[in-house]
Length: 114
Length: 112
Image (cartoon, rainbow over all chains, first blue to last red; front, side):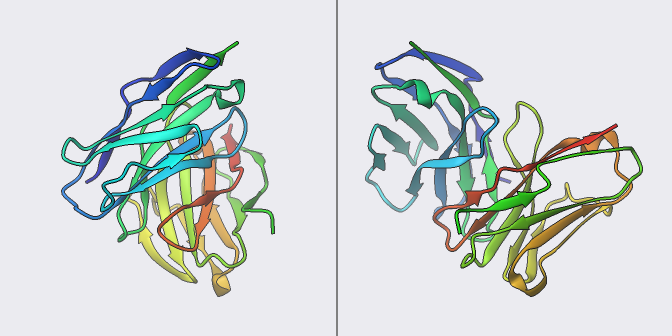
């Protein structure tokens, strides 16, 4: 079974600084997808960034980027120039093409301080 | 169509009662998923539909739980004889491909 581990239950960062959230996963598959989702307080989950395992290049979306280390089964999220609106729970998720269910980590609560 | 919608947003029920939740996915999405999220945890997969076919069910989905997706559009999740341990946020998501699942706002269930 695939497991996703987020070892940082809580993190904080000063506004405009950079923070990195960690995620490791366990799988014997070679083809899969990795995601970071953001869940603001009392609001629905939205996708931050995704990575296909067959792509060597790390995904980037504006201030968000990942460090994908396939051999180490590591998928960290870097948030640059942190903003107050980045305050949220961040979930790392793993998905195989079949079956098409997504496995989530326990989450990291990020607080951006002014 | 602005996204995945779920109804109701909140449900309070007494132990032993039956409850039903509805999810309306993004209209062109053929995949629909149900998850359960308890406080401080990540969502846990419950079940998955491709069109009207239920293709995957988690072992978390006991016999008291049933999900349907008639005509491959909206979906319902029914919990019979609710227990206090069923209290959680029930999330629905839909997708068109493997790339991204779009989540609804969830239905928060409280069983007294």
